[in-house]
Image (tube, rainbow, N blue to C red; front, top):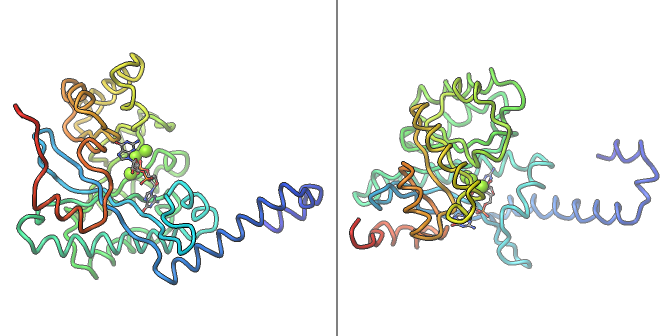
Length: 284
Ligand code: C2E
Ligand code: MG
Ligand code: MG
Ligand code: MG
């Protein structure tokens, strides 16, 4: 970045630009410190099957900032990606999630749960990503069959062959793959067919107005049909009402995630949910 700035000294002395850079530098410092001081925490959001039983959780990282309080991922993941700090952060998330899988495996009420972990494109593109995941699985004793990695379509813009090889290597060990935020990126349907995916995840932007916007309804239905014809699972994110859930179920959706079932919650709360079970509405 310093190099880019010196090539364009006019911009460097632009006060607005300078303050943006200072904010970024401060954020980077803060993020480094946060990693060292263990200020990150994982929240768990239920993933639910059509019959309302809880099948697993997506882990979502939060930053408990000593001054700013709880910071949401949209406010620090982009900076973590730009600075490369997403690599140690992502590794910590994976390790923590896999440790939890092993703890859950030993208790009857949580033994069958899966854990879905978000993986940034930058993280996945590391040459030793496969080895890292296998090392974490070995070190934590987590069952690879219970681990699901959520990838985004941004991975499809470069070196798809490398992507396929890494996915295949992990899949051979039992790790599952979900394509997150599906429909918002640039998936080519021909690539989609070649990727060893297990699941498409319908982005919440299509779910929000699925009952009122015919375009969103058409897109949601199309994604569900596409998943079916490619023999993939499909999960809808951002399900906030029973009416949205029912519409998606009618269209053939099999799995759901959203505030209607549970918000992302701290571990203790998620475990309570597992013990108590979800309340299915009458008739389901
Ligand atoms: P995502 O993976 O698509 O996660 C879904 C987001 O939707 C989460 O936001 C979740 O809290 C939110 N959400 C869930 N249900 C509902 C709902 O019913 N309604 C609405 N309006 N929102 C819902 P969150 O936790 O703020 O995370 C935002 C994004 O940050 C994630 O989107 C993911 O891309 C990224 N992220 C989170 N944790 C990690 C991580 O550990 N590693 C990486 N690389 N990215 C992460
Ligand atoms: Mg996700
Ligand atoms: Mg998503
Ligand atoms: Mg999303």
